[in-house]
Image (cartoon, rainbow, N blue to C red; front, side, top):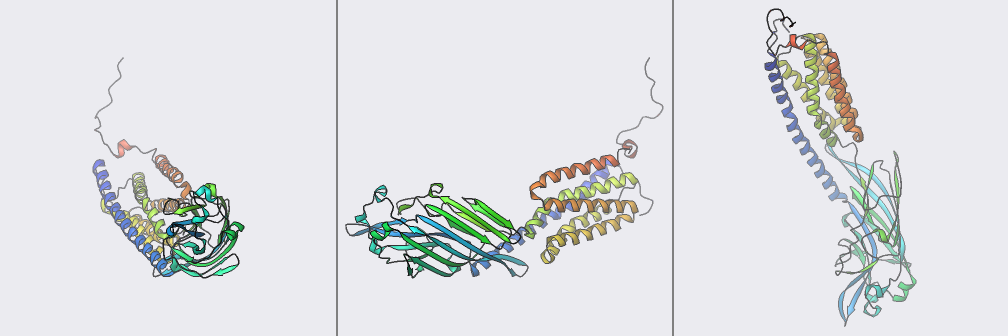
Length: 439
């Protein structure tokens, strides 16, 4: 840069820098719109994968449904939940790619064992003479029948043929076996059951603890599960090889009884579920979106570094030079998104900001070498610190606050000997010697 640079008026310089900063920051808001669009496309890919494979699966049951008759007329059905339920599910999770996007899907091997027993009919206000046991059926709720690869049900030692649910039941979707020809004696004696399912799904697997006492074990090869629903696991183990979680749930902890009249009660087995979600902790679009939230902070720190260096070197950059350096900082966010879609977020972040720091350092070095090197070093520190903050969501606010405070303290320290009054005379100086003190 030529030596003909002059020292501009302080307020005019400040106004110019603020205008340039606003121009540089404006594309960040447009970029957030682009990221939102990519997130929407990613979600559409996940939904598309679910349609072709299987969506989020919910398993409820099995349950026995007994017709309730009066004067030869069907008056409804009674849903009877198991006395005990032991559920085991093993998930095999994998990624499916479609273009630039990926979807997480799983295959699940589910085994349900337990026992049915006769309830207290008098507590339900039902006489056994009003129950048509010969037309009972057993039903199993499954959220997405399209994900059923195989389903086997054995009740009281007999293998039963299953069909899609075709009439109102205690659940809307799933499979059942009609014409059970049950007897009250068999129910009072107790009926053991076993269900074996091979399911395909995506997103999450939920299960209703329908037993009076339910024990559940869910395991999988995915190291990043999220436990959700009305019940958290009593025991869990999560590692790089996968996870395993166990629940033990009493009927007293859920929102529906062990038996009820379908259609005359608000009870629903879907009201109290336990769930395991298959999440991707390295969702690059979520990470880029978080990064953009720090965009204004990064631009402010970059301009602060340039301004501090300019004050120390007494060489104020031209507004166009501010604009060029700021544009390089803003462009790095777009480069991060572009690179991340091909090489992952970490490498995309590294490549984008390495290019940015090199551009800014070389450009500002033409004015003063130490200004370019100093600003480049400051940007390296800022981007390294932001990367650490992005990887530590729990302490993001604390780390960010400490970082900003440290940046301000550093600026105060390096400029503590600057004579601001001489550098930028914002108020008129009085000519002549100072007035003598009275007395």
